[in-house]
Image 1 (cartoon, rainbow, N blue to C red):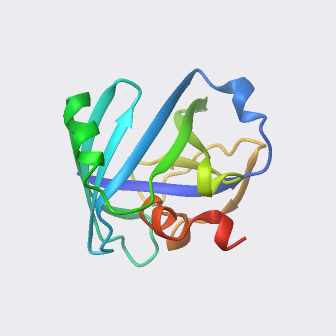
Image 2: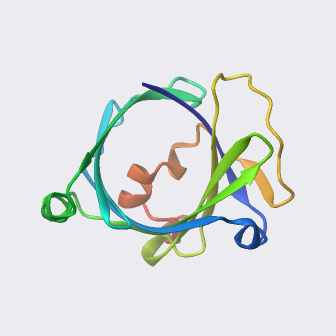
Image 3: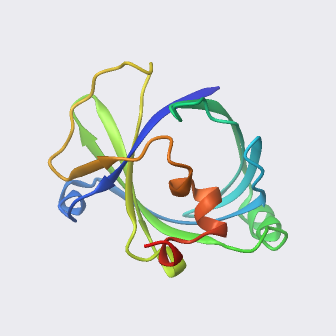
Amino acid sequence: MIEIERKFLVLSEDFKNQSHIQTRIVQGFLNTNPERTVRVRLKGEKGFLTVKGKSTHDGLSRFEWEKEISKPDAEALLQLCENGVIDKTRFEINVGKHVFEVDEFYGDNEGLIIAEVELNSEDEVFEKPEWLGEEVTGDNRYYNSQLSQFPFKIWV
């Protein structure tokens, strides 16, 4: 249940032409404490409850536990969340042996596009697509829990 991922800014919208899955996501946070975040997510027609632990010093790894819940349960829990809902579309793109998840944000985070790739180890080599920009792994500003409280529009 350890998640290893790297995050990057995205240079262009070329990824959209390479995407094989697109899903609208709305999520909120029951707890945004950096030691343990608790997220409620509607991903398409499915609901999820996720607990994430504190990241390692470099931001590459952290504990993650996720459970699918019913859509009505997720909708009800979203009403209890802290202020600041995240609204985005996730594009999934196959690049070599990996799947990049690219999130295009809306609302208070409009203009932000972040790509993530999950890895099996912290030193795993992966192919980088041409639209991949600056790495922001470990920069807390780009965590969804932080974007819900301190949106992109107030710090750009």
